[in-house]
Image (tube, rainbow, N blue to C red; front, side):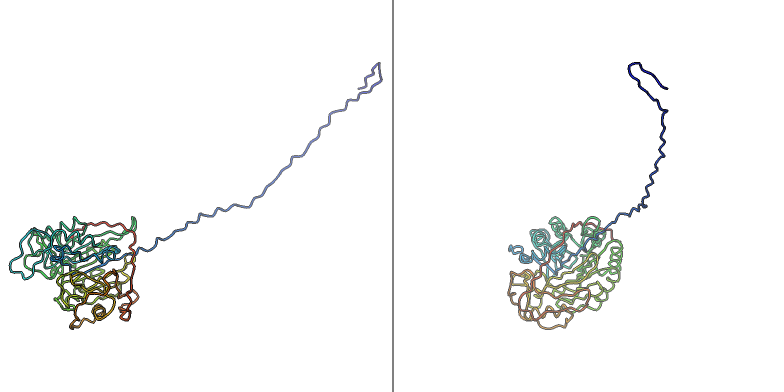
Length: 405
């Protein structure tokens, strides 16, 4: 359209609207497929639980305790280093009762003896022996009660036969990794009236072998380790009885891990094979008076990894003038002890008793057997004391009982 203006000629042109069409742009993004890897879980196996059981032989304190003598004062650090320590308490602990008429030897120590035993680091004490009831029922019950009150677990005795035969179970380790250790004690040396019955307090009679074997089988089914301790043998005989060797093998076949004996008042051999151990007699551990032949003694140390018995050590000692064990590391006594423990048990006259040269050392030279070998290696050439430091692993201990058949 053209428009004429009077003041100035001006031409205005109106163009038709222009439409611009832009083609849509399509952007395509291609991604590689994403693969999600499962999270990696690292499982760390806990370290093996290594623990030890130390055992000593006969303990008699009828003369030393009234005199205020502690026969264990030099051994407390060593015994306390073990996870468990066990002895045979061969006496009544009481101030009650009357000595059994007609019995040649009767032994009783004052009540303070129980705490002395506990303070030494001893955790378990068998009363299944031929002196526990020397002063009658009341004194026998006092013995068990005083030891229990002092924190010592009593083996092989009870208010009746069921209680006497019932295994005592000690639990070691940490929550979720507990190890249950059952202890069974009995005596094959049985004075009249000592055996527990349904109506009489007393000790477990080891001459009822079927009952003892049945207890071992039941205990082995529900526990990780079974330790049997027996009062047996012939006094002052350094060789075990063949019938007792047979019984010990039967106990191992029934499920026992170790059989530990006492009563002969002298040492007898220790046998170890295939994770099983027999110590026929540990002799007198603390005993006054001592004689030349009964002065040889020591501490048996059993070493475990989890539920496996991996080896043992025997720490030689000699009873001193007051009946207390003193470590010995060389000389004829040391040699004789190692010979007997390693199996050379033939009877021969012992040398005279002399006080051990070093009464301050708590750990003596050792005889060591490991699981890889059934041969005991004896070090008889060392003249310098060998000190073994044993650190007990952290563990919790609980004591329970299980019903005996």
